[in-house]
Length: 80
Image 1 (tube, rainbow, N blue to C red):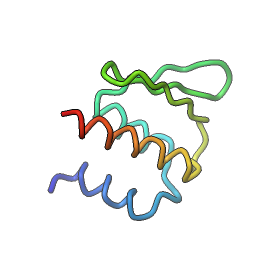
Image 2: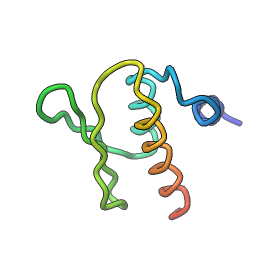
Image 3: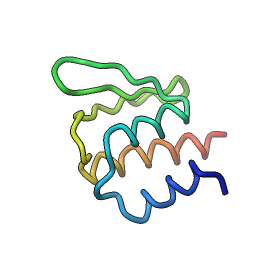
Image 4: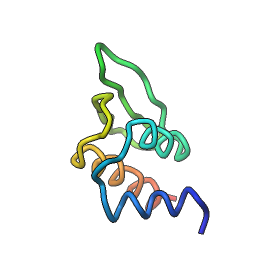
């Protein structure tokens, strides 16, 4: 198990207290593009998924947003 897999597993077990930078690192590693939009929000998008996820840039990230990113990562892994 790689370091990135361990980090992802830890976040799955406890989605509280995840920093914005850590979540963006996981998303970028999986091929998502991160685009700054107006104010303090960012869009996450992947070329093979038509859905766009908007996240506020606050640390720690609320668990609902962490779970949404994990759901997109799982969906991406299923397609591979």
